[in-house]
Image 1 (cartoon, rainbow, N blue to C red):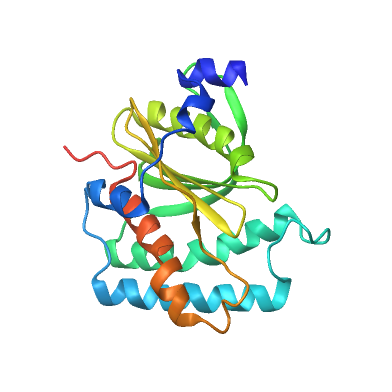
Image 2 (tube, helix red, strand yellow; image 1 turned 30 degrees about the horizontal axis):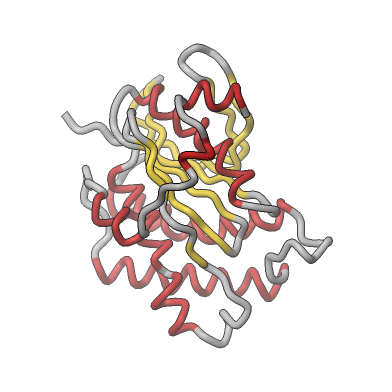
Length: 228
């Protein structure tokens, strides 16, 4: 923990005392490129919802109390959520973006961190890529995932040499969005993306939980991109 805090430049305990609402995080996002239209966002939310329902029916509900539900299952869930959003964004914008799984990010001082479950990369050209966002999933708690995510965001921001990077931590059920602007880290309050009656309450999911799609879309539009 001490080594991590030295690299981050702050005490994690103090950082955990601060948080903003998801709506404020979205309002403060500064899109650098045009993204999906309103109808396309809604269609993507429908697709994400369908994927979540299929996942729960096939692999079960993500809960720590189920010994058979592994971290790999949560990673499967995260992928089913990310894939429709990234695909729709890529097709709309023509950006050469892609997901990398189990990606190790090397800091500018050549120190290496752990492997991140998902990293979204924007391929600018030969030998030139920008990191857009990272997703760290843990079965046990968001706090466990967050420290690794913060370090990855710090390294991503330093390697991007400008711009904003975003991070997401999740247990499958709960999610949290983080932002690093090169100087300051900001985090949202926790928000639920899954609940046990999700298959019977689509309207509730669309109203309360589909904001995750808006968060990822906002990260895609502004994270990692440096526009001259």
